[in-house]
Image (tube, rainbow, N blue to C red; front, side):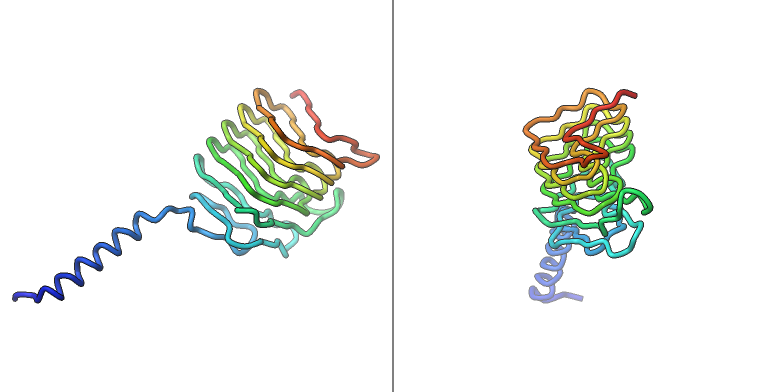
Amino acid sequence: MNKSPLQNNRKASLLLVSSLALCLPASALALDQCGQTITADTKLDRDVSCIVNGVNGITIGADAITLDCDGHRLSGLGTPLRGGPPTIGIALDGRKGVTVKNCNVTGFALAGILLSNSSRNKVINNDVTRNSTAGIRLNSSFDNKLRENTVSGNRAGGIFLQGSSYNKLTENTASGNGDLQFPAGAEIFSA
């Protein structure tokens, strides 16, 4: 059966649209609630508030991806230092080659941004404020780059490195971190 040129054009157009959809970058993904694990490039298109106690903001679940908050806020419940669950704004555990950038992270109990057993990641141009312990914390993490971050008003320290070596910190600003019990802008502990 012969098809009209119009029918053939519709098929070609449909095929073209389908092919283009497959080529869209994963960065078009967006989050609307806390507690999610991302495994592809993700760009926030709105602020995200964690309204359930004990839930982390965003967990990075794959290597070599980018989380770009595009200036949006990721906020926790502001759990006190003692007595609440240890929530994390952005968590990387065992990750390599991840970029976290342009995020405003506030109100988490353990850390605004935590890298644990992670290497060769970039944490760039984030504003990490008013977390109950550290703003940015690295535990047993190596060869990461922290650049142009602002950490302020975090109760136990702005940038906290423990058992972590060969990390490069450049052009970061730490101010107003720590209190009488934990006075520190940056803390570095050996393993």
